[in-house]
Length: 376
Ligand code: CUA
Image (cartoon, rainbow, N blue to C red):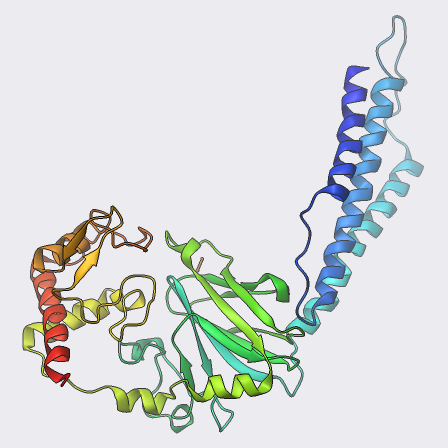
């Protein structure tokens, strides 16, 4: 009897909880209402089955409870019952899977007028590329990626010259237009997810994945990485602002093209040691988190780093010098810069040798000194 009552409370409580709990979908801001419908169909199929099975169990434990002298019937086969259960189960499974196939077919077949945009993912940030005036994204290759070519643009492809490169984690898109989103990853598996768009797709190293969507509501939406991609996974966020066409045009015009980015790179007079230090930083992926142009990425920028007074998370402050740089590579969490999460891994001498580390420090010092020398 107690078990039957417990099962009854479980079923009734679950149903009440489902309908009074505050957790539900966010307001949808894209064309993918069909995805909500498929989720709801699955929800209702599972819900009805859960209630039916729960109530049947409660009834059975009460009805067939132990009684002195009662004997169970032996009934190993019941073709009618088996056929009935098979048909009902099959209908339930088809109802859950078939709508998803239809929506998926739509999801990966963008309309012909969809505007292509590219989302580049890497540990632990997002960046974006627009095709520029020619409407064609230039070719890219991961082997082209360097600190002055973060998107891996093919330097010999004229189609890439006018590509607009958005290195920050914030992108704008005009409302009520379809986009084909192409996804790349520079390192490991990530997953681009904007809950309000109901749109989600893995970014897989070595291939380009895609989906399409049409934003239907202006607003500022958060991009999440929905694939555990390393210890900084939780920091891998971005924003997509859905705006009117005029705002978008003004914003896009302010972003650099690949040609402008190339022209803006002024060769500085680094020593051989500092140049090696820069290669060390490139080879170890430091620029994925530390910018040289002052932009805030995952970690503190390296612009003007040397000799700077830096506030630390524990409330103290420190002047950046050689010993601080060395410690920050070997034991990054020891003196954490204020406002940054302790996501950097420690690089021991097996990964970056003492010599390479000294070269890296030389690069940081000369980068600051050369920048100061060139400022009037
Ligand atoms: Cu990228 Cu999680």
